[in-house]
Image (cartoon, rainbow, N blue to C red):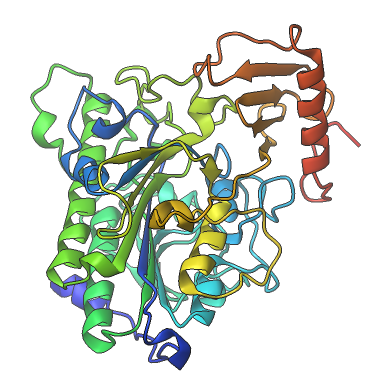
Length: 463
């Protein structure tokens, strides 16, 4: 462990689980979230252009979900759905901006605190800013180290990160630094991802040493392989180009692969730590991504077929923009080497965490617990009636999935509806709206019903 990691060790919660939870200890929960990683960017999901051995191993030791969805097609709303369990039709944060969660918003961390968990967030938040009600430490997290603002998180060599509620200075130099800490460093000495990964490992190690019987929830929200948008085509910022440095590829493509492999390496380090502490069978590790692959910072998602068999990328409501990997590893409980076609999404984490923690969610949410699938104990797995998304950029668009059917309407509310049968057309190449008018009408009605009007989130030009 580095001296820097030791310096970042948080003051840990000393609260122990309630007596009712002691005999049948709920699992530790680690949710690892990649940033802009595509459905096809992992070997276990079909990637052949480069290797992701540790994440593939995670899938081999656990279950791989094929029909799991992000909360939205961009960062902040997707993370709001993940944390609050409310889809973007009535989530408080429905787009990228400078919004802050309110005191009345209930997060996964708050639910698990009531179940006796210690809680930590290491990485990117995007749901609250300095001195606001949306700070992670005011939304159920005992410990936070990372980025609050998504624009700040573009910069992999920032002059500061946030530790708990204060700025933690870094030795990087960023000329013309933006208000939120964004920019391009002229002196690069401390790579933010590495610091965040070290802090997460240190927090687990220290927590287990101090409170071995207390379950923990770690939300490891990594920024790889997001680009530094302020750096233009040099935006795939990474300390070195890794094992593929000598490939005859454009530099941004080598940078992208180096980012994914660094992500893969550190997922492996976390798994190794969990195993070395004897927590293997007591820990559920979930791995996913916040939306589809990006075409920023010089990256070309077509180069490595980052969306696999899907159409669309980040900001699209086609499957490539919102369908994401989900891997679940819980040895002795979740089946190893299995594939699940259970249809779920980010709104399910809160319900699932509450189920696993043995408490009621005690808040309004749109989630369905997929704990029965994780446990594989024969208990029935509830299913969603439908999944819904809406998005306010690029003229606006919304989408709904119900069973095999997927509909997209753009612009929102009164645009033409596209209809796809995902059981036969995963790539959404054949619009069946004219052939199936009754199904199209039903799907449009679902989109209408799922949207709750908001003064903050309005389609430009529409009253």
